[in-house]
Amino acid sequence: GNSPMTKRYIQRLQIRESWNIVYGLAMKKVTSDPKLARALFFTPEDDDELVRTTMRHFNDDRDSIIDLVDASSNLPDKFTDKGTGRASWFNSETTEVFVFGAENDYIVDREGVEELGKFFNTSPEILKAFPHDIMLTRRWKEVAETLCSRLAPILSEVET
Image (cartoon, rainbow, N blue to C red; front, side, top):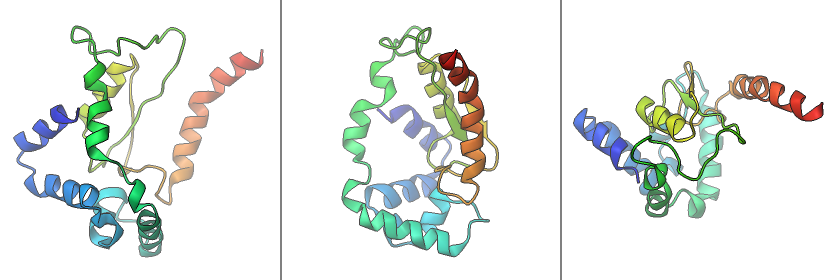
């Protein structure tokens, strides 16, 4: 499921970055290693207290941190029309999807965001200077405002 992105990481020789992702997520070290948690999920500007607080939440949720084996069997490339790169079951004429990516994402590369956009037949939006988990940073309101601005036209159509 994750193999195209994994292959890109290996081809780019990002051994350290790939190891950090495996070490942080699969081995759940983001619950105990502040430097690693910061690298994977935060910006340098996010303060230490935010990182520590989020790490406590990660630790509280450590049994429900993503199951990589299960996730891999359900990622988009398993259900992609090989000819178009789109979801064979998704109708973009009846359902609008927003795909957001983060410019400074340590975990999902830009190509992965573009693949997801193509999968849902939409143009992804890359949020400038954000880390992987765009809603964890102190700048989460910017993300919420961006999402609200994309939803406003749709909601106004529903109301009329």
